[in-house]
Image (tube, rainbow, N blue to C red; front, side):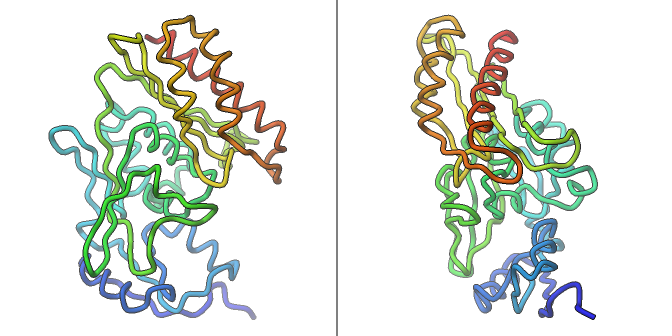
Length: 290
């Protein structure tokens, strides 16, 4: 009878330094286990066959979820999605992130899964990615040799590909507090109301501005090889015009910034239409709220 999982050596480091030493030793033959909601699936499917699994759930430094002055949310690599979703600061100041993280899997999956795992899996459909993109999040990376910071917009390099080297791991994500008066929202189209990956996901952040009236940030999931922020389209909303006129100008620019494909969840044309529909729905709702 075939085993459920391939054989591997299991490591349970108690400190970040210990974890980094192990990762430096085994590099591409090792995988990090935090929540395991993606890793265990790929192991069972024999899509991965690492010789070593490094479980970092007991590393104290990675379990911290804090709000630090002058205004920055720090999410450790072992912090579960449900911890993040139900954290008072997230609910009050980072509503777009709470909404996005709350759509990942179901409640039981979110008890195990982590935000850092969601971005490190580097799926184009990662629900947390558009929210982190509009919030200008920073990814904190460490190895045995040192640490570095990477803006979230530079972290994704392709389908299942990130900027991480083989001896590096993400230790946390830091998110600056949104500008005063900002309102954010995440909308996700999926095949069912239950657990499902996004056919299209869109995150938006609208901020009052004394010169233009409003500034807008927009980012998408499931429309390109990586999550996408549409910087060129955002500039259009700095004009003082009615929202419908701004949307008419912005939608063609957004369409040129994305490249949806057809797969088992949706066709290319349907995804393109969802981009238009969800963008209009999201921004109109945020405009009316302001």
